[in-house]
Image (cartoon, rainbow, N blue to C red; front, side, top):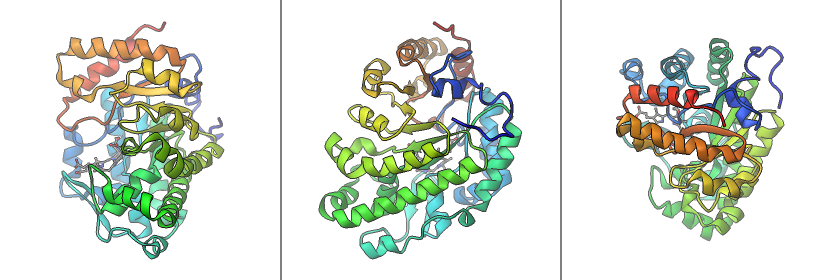
Length: 350
Ligand code: CP3
């Protein structure tokens, strides 16, 4: 896996990239999904009066917000501050992120014509992303930057439902009932995700994560037939860029094998599945996860005892990136995450 020739000398040897490559690490690397954002007072201050999507399009804000948790916690990786719907916004889809709700799409996608009306993404749509990534990489030095995209199923869910959904009923109705429209939509989103990841890696991101947060709504057969080929296209394209690929979803206990086979170097595991159960499913790949995000609300010694169990279980993968089993909950006390980071980084190697 290659890094750009002008990359910081320490980057290739960072604990995070070593774990992703399943090489011996100096300590168990740790970062947190949604580590930037509403749990941090310095984030809330910066975001005052600035809409979520607007903040994603202002490189100076993206750089600062992405760096905030790195400074505060000393985590082993930064995750680019953006959202899975940003590339859709950039190509012209009429959508917004509503505070406390999530992404809302003005005209939900239902027909082939709706799909065909969505432009493919080119680097010209997202110059602000390249600028923010390049600025971040310069600031981060030896700390890797993880770029990301939403996977086709999860992004399709927002486009078809028109907003957040529990059952994903309209999305799955299209998948079951209109396979030609579904296929065209999944291809469209996969192409956008692949191009969007390429922009981030070209500007200096040293790993990528594909978020298929809502894939757990699918049976293994439906996942393999109607979803996996499209995620595979995205991950295979990312593989040609020479960076490790993380693939994550929620409630995926019976999809982990397939999510690995789709082309992941690191399989992200949510907190419901013990790593000891997940690791045999993912085979010869690294794993990421998976402390229950609510454990930060327990006394510190309860949280760290559970973190130790996660680390011990992760050893069998010979490549473990510590994380929460889903995103940081906004009411999380940042001091607990600081203590958790220090605990994981200081925990003895086997
Ligand atoms: O440091 C980081 O990890 C933050 C970067 C980030 C955001 N969204 C910022 C954000 C990342 C990696 C995402 C990915 C994302 N967005 C996913 C996949 C990850 C996951 O949680 O499973 C999904 C499903 C989305 C869609 C989305 N966008 C949701 C469900 C929400 C939350 C709605 C809410 O308010 O509770 C958003 C909004 C969003 N994305 C916020 C942030 C900081 C909140 C913005 C605000 O209200 O100001």
